[in-house]
Length: 70
Image 1: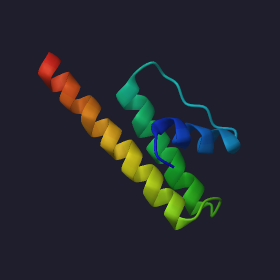
Image 2: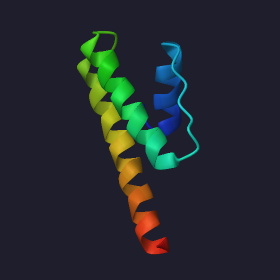
Image 3: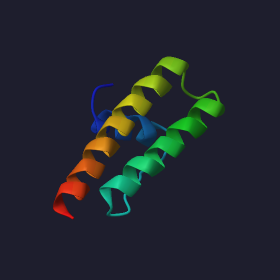
Image 4: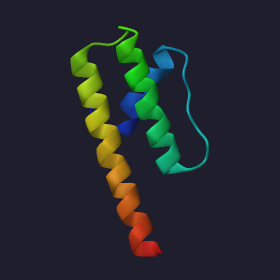
């Protein structure tokens, strides 16, 4: 797993598609879903860590973009 797209594909395997139109909100919801999958023992710790790293990194980039715009 290397990109947000990869995380989306992981979620899609479990029937979850997230799109609310706000990039930051999408990333936060994906993070919650990935945590739920781990707690339900549907993904392993390695997948959880990779997904959280990607999502949190992208969320930080999005927050920085918003701060420079606003």
